[in-house]
Image (cartoon, rainbow, N blue to C red; front, side, top):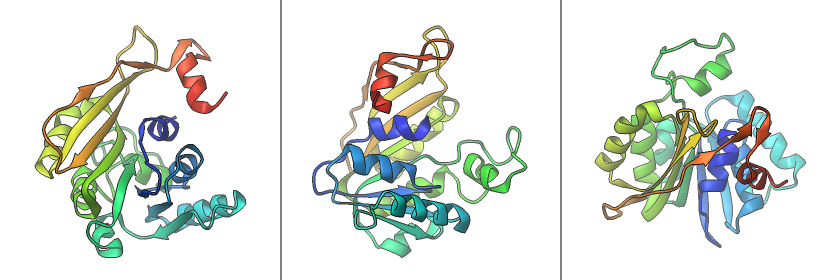
Length: 214
């Protein structure tokens, strides 16, 4: 769900290059390749097993010329790719602070959900370096950290430009937030209408069905 929502929220223009930080099994680059006219998509993943699965998914979909999976540490993204090298960055980073909450005994899942190998600061620092001037940053995260996220985005001069809160049901609290930032952008943020996931238990809203392509 996180990846589908982020791919629907992200804007990639014709000819642009995209880097997905912490790509996991590569779902976001694959979705964006299908939905946009971007020139090339790169996924960076530290866990070799996940990176291998991502490469196999890319090969299965015959997208080797459009998508590259790189095994490497997100904290070294600017060293791996160089400064100002991408038009767009997407990321679905770990959202739990260190050991806050239950850590999944499956290490791969624990690393994907908890700030064990990287944290929000790492994501924003490297994004600020790797993005081109006026490049765009897209992230899905959790609302309980929203104040921290917005403050750190501005501190790294990734100015928040768009925000959309995601609600599981219309009468529940939001459990996800979608954010767009711009490297060196002017201070002005648009808050979009809420995105409601379920009309009733087990039944998506029309907008969610549209995002999934039904």
